[in-house]
Amino acid sequence: MTSAAPLSLHPTSWSVRPADFAGGAPELAVIIPTLNERDNVPLVVERLNRALAGIAWEAIFVDDDSPDGTADVVRAAARRQGNIRCLQRLGRRGLASACIEGVLASVAPYAAVMDGDLQHDESLLPAMLSKLKTEGLDIVVASRHIEDGGVGDWQRSRIMISDIATRLGRLVVKADLSDPMSGFFMIRREAFALAMRSLSGQGFKILLDLFASAPRPFAFAEVPLQFRQRLHGESKLDAMAAWEYLMLLLQKLVGPAVPVRFLLFAMIGALGVGTHMLTLWFATRVLLAAFALGQAAATWVAMTGNFLLNNLFTYRDRRLRGWRVLTGLISFYAVCGAGAAANVGVASYLNGDHQAWWLAGLAGAAVSVVWNYAMSSIFTWTPRLPPQPAVAAPAALSDTPAALSQ
Image (cartoon, rainbow, N blue to C red):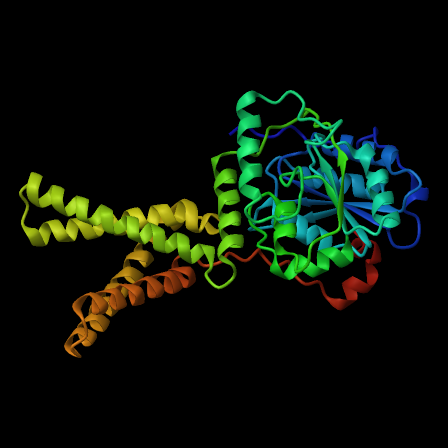
């Protein structure tokens, strides 16, 4: 990994407009989730200053602890301009959850969500705000798929992928949105509050999450968006982003009764059964190993495979790295061992009580899956808490009011 270039903490290109934010609460909060966008921050601030002149606004950059020092650049902007704020998150990532936390961190009655890569046209913000205020709408969406909108110079493959994702999104969004995949929109706080406790916060499509979680249909309008090219940095879309999108759809389809994480865990467990049987066949039929030895090897391979897949997909937000992979694997072995004992115990008890053999077997397997999921969530993939800052003494706090305002 190459080291980042020295940070420019005192840029001179930002034009400050004190009249836009001096005194009173902001009317509009612009929420900008960031990850490695340090070079784009000054340009975003400068363009917002031009686009939102005369409006009481604030910009909240929600940064997922970018290695390139994005948060430091935002803080430098905040020292020069009071309506710029930095919300730096430790130990967690995700565009949707970043947007949720950004909206909740503001008191503004209207909140806009836009990317920090300059691909969204900030000059649309005043018109979007005007529509919300004058037409009694809940949300205004900037759409690439209506007249005068467009996706710019996208490759044909990306257009096809976006079209497939849009079609899948209609499974959970019943509103006639032309662009449910849009990441640029503005919403009333009251409308956000209606949906916020049902949001999954998963993946990168917060707009789709909002529409799918709202207890009533949103009153919405769309404005055309010409998607621009990224100037600095690189796209965050990858195979994992697509996976998270599919998980969001699944969660909205099955509802809160069955957690998607549990479904994934059970699916990987079923795959582990197939892995076990294939390994057992190979060991006993091809390698001609004794059955007990083959069974032990198959059990080890299946448990190890399940651990690696769960670490990669089911617990992606808590993924173990480095030496924690080894300690996590050991704890997973222990959890699964106890689950196997519970499986055998429950199944044997029911079978001895003259229950059908298949019913006893299914009951034992169900107990094992629930046990393994619950215990591994607690002991193997323990949620990581961000480090707590040291608490200053009261006397020191009273002497440094300026420090508290940073």
